[in-house]
Image 1 (tube, helix red, strand yellow):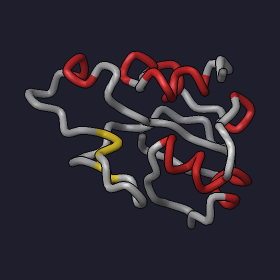
Image 2: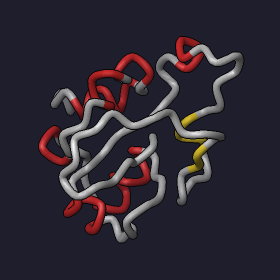
Image 3: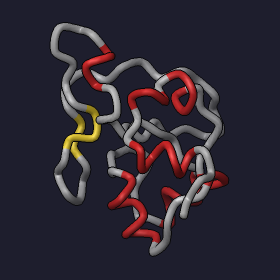
Image 4: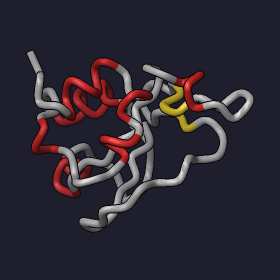
Length: 110
């Protein structure tokens, strides 16, 4: 889960170099690609953008990384579809996302 955070920008993020760890639990949100094949990461990433207000509510500064679970813990509720900022990462990289994050992005929170 890379949180590519920007002021309302819609952009396709480039793949980050090296593992990015959640600030709270230290789990890798974007594992390192072995051999350069994105298919190796299917269902293992949490690569997303949330709205500025949600990121601020979590007490995060402009940049940083949080897995979806730690972000939800910080804001005290589950993420909802409307919490996510417009980003091509939510569609282009959807097959890489964890089931938890896909359910939040698609608005299927139970």
